[in-house]
Length: 411
Image (cartoon, rainbow, N blue to C red; front, side):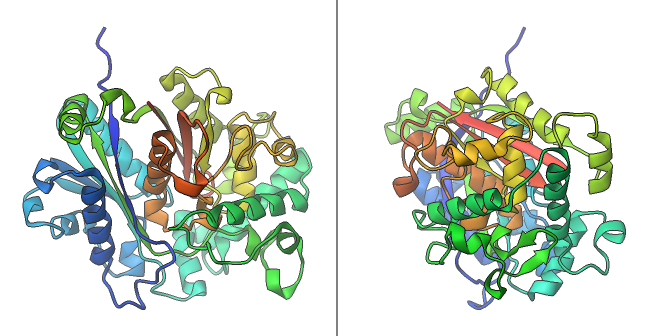
């Protein structure tokens, strides 16, 4: 019986998520170029070595009036002219779908070295228009059309469902927000690294923390972000050649040990109806996690040292805590109160600051999570390093728990 070829992560580069590229009067290509050139510099990969490229992006046609982003990869360096490229879209999971496509090509032995870049330029429009654009990640006509800021309302309903089944306290959501903002202060590329936030403010019900949709308030929300992230995935053959050139041991190069990918029905109410007799509110998210653990040969979350999860809102991180198995279903609050998810805890969640703290350029988030997992297992995460991290998991979600992708990165 043949084994699936290993896929290695050589490293990469992230732009500063605090930047506003529209104010800088720069095209989305400028973000892609900085990310890819930065990744080549960081990894010492030569452009002539890249055999294929995959771009993750959600809605450049809306935000930037630009499609065909795969072709723009060929504008980054003259050596890329003629390269096979493609663009992948799955709402906020677009970056992870691009990673899965690149992985599949390496596993199929079509190519040995792939570049994956996730990119989104979101600050081209105001908050209301941007919220409407994001609504296309749901069933627009049924869940978003004519509704101001539809996604906070949808993820507010996720909190409502938890409250209905198990009970949910706002102070636990506020603690998630405060932890992510606190971690972001340690991340030099985080969007909110200079912002003010603490648990008391996140709990407040004042104009400074206004309601956005249902139980979701400003402090519960991820950020509107411009950003790009690029990384290189390699076959063992390419990784060994890279190691020989850079003086690295192959056993020290992180690889993708496991992955999971499931897609649920697109309407949130249909997901909830399907899960009414299930212990988990979003069982397809749970299956994504358990598939990744199984493929990695890891029994359960006790074999994971840190998690980079999709906290588009505090309710999605609250869901992720029990869906990863850090607690029993409906008991995520225990991991919060016991400090399990805090930096320095048993299994830190979002040491980077996550989407709430680090930022959420939609098409780039999945790639950013994978790159942060790489940093953790190589001990290069700086001030937000999780001591002794060997296996790090990600969870990237598109829509209201619709497209779910998990990667487990380790050495």
